[in-house]
Amino acid sequence: MLCYLDEKTTAMANDIYANNVNDYVCPRQAAAEKEQFFRKGPISIGLSCLVPKPGDFMIHDLTGVPILLVRRPDGSLGAFLNVCRHRGARVAEGCGSAKLFTCPFHAWTYDADGKLRGRPDERSFAGLEKDKVGLRPLPIVEKYGMIWVSPTPGPTFEIAPLLGGLERDLAEYKLEGYHHYETRILRRQMNWKLVIDTFLETYHLQFLYPKTIYPILHSNLATFDAFGRNLRMIAARRTIEQLCATPQDQWNIIPLTAVICVLFPNTAFIIQGDHLETWHVYPSGDGVNKSTMRVSFYTPEPANTEKARKYWNKNFNLLMATVEDEDFPMAEGIQRGFHSPAQEAIHFGHNEPALQHFHKSVKTALGVS
Ligand code: FES
Image (cartoon, rainbow, N blue to C red; front, top):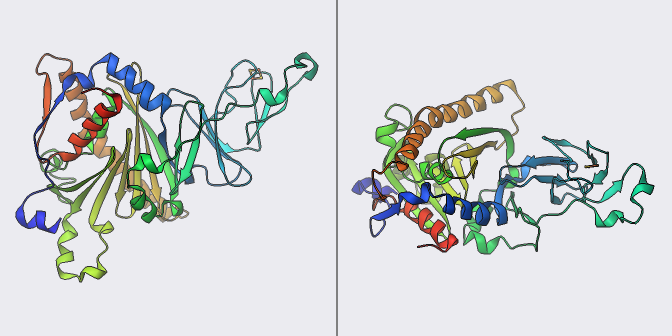
């Protein structure tokens, strides 16, 4: 990175890449992405601290499948379809702590293992064995302080092959020690991939944020590494030059950088010096030009004091203001342009290798060229 700074360059791809505009507007591709990425999965849900203690639960609906996550008494995490086996009502809402989940419709009651523990007027269901109608479990993996779920019932999965080597970084970040501060839901009029694109180059910093981000981060300067379909891009804060005067064995690059990982397909995971943000992006509507984002803010210490809450609120609000006022209006304009006959492809330059990798990975995963 210091070399890039010296030579006024950045990580470079070998070629310019023409990405079809159709990728952002095609209902058939949107349907294939929904099926493959968001229905089958597996997909990253967030950090373990979303459900930290035995009895804690949360629901998750943004893949299009109603999911219930429950921390069991033994500390393990279960995932179930949030669908009652009597007549299909949702058995839980929101998040909180509960030993049992009682369906609001006719009070069938399930435990943290999804087992049906009781149902009123038992004799009316004699012959329908209780152990045949527990909540349907979903495959789940919890590792490196993170949670992945497959929204479709089936065999369990291994996470290492999906991470492609990025697990070494994830282990080093010690995510188990983080605390959930807040999650906000944003809905915008753009394809979900366009949201991910927002994070994948620093070329725009100087122009889109001359007064907010550009004074903090170098523009058009970032490292790029691919880990299977995932990627890691590291942007440099202006303070990075202080490394030149520091012996290399004393370097700590985290406070001097912004580390952006994309956990394929829909999660941007950003280490911002003193805290962590995750952006989980989902298609909504028909998946073409509407998306929903689950933006979570995690801190290394619990925010127990007024002073801490004030500090983190200011940080979170600044982040939201930047994306809401600058990035997303720009991206929504791009989406509208994609529906016009202006061009068949957009172009990712040599200086945009992360964009190239992400879109090539989407195509590979979908089996399209
Ligand atoms: S639908 Fe849940 S108890 Fe009837």
